[in-house]
Image 1 (cartoon, rainbow, N blue to C red):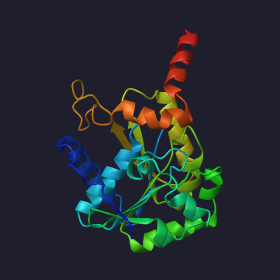
Image 2: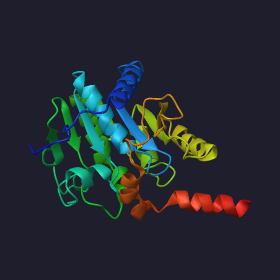
Image 3: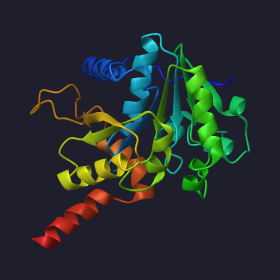
Image 4: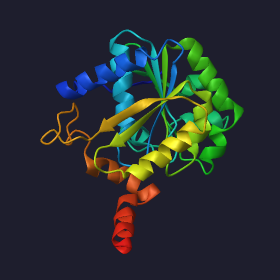
Length: 249
């Protein structure tokens, strides 16, 4: 089994403490909450790094964890750990029956943590996520692991998260502080609730510590980094939003 290195450096203290709090809150949701979907309202909110760091925190406690990278459209994790080579076998290859589970399952340098990266960008990601192979994968992972964390694209941009949600036990929504209008966040929440999967809570990300006494530092999830990866696929929704606001004035 191929191994990738994800634990090159420790998380900053405040981020580590925030992940411990998120981990504890997740554990108090009950032992039946094993398959957890992570999504966000828009792109550039840091959901994939939150998902990965949550996995790291759970694994540090001794839980067997797998991260399923279901953002096949524009995966931050696949680009980061496959060094831009999206032809490496991943979830899209598994769901299209081009690779088996043993070919896409990756060990990490952290004990108890495995990852399935997104794989090659398919022409039909929503259709792949809705086929029976995705359900079978999550059933297998549910039996083999204590927690299955599924990273999905932003719910307000594409339908993928809503497709996967009924297969999961709970949803955690990542919201970047001060960047998402209330109505847009409420729309995302309404879409998630309509899936029938319980929304367990939200992670308020990218909070500026200079003005707010929260755990995350605005500089930790760098806006430029995520814009580089998401902007070219989903479009710059923030600019469109600002333009729309100005036109209404």
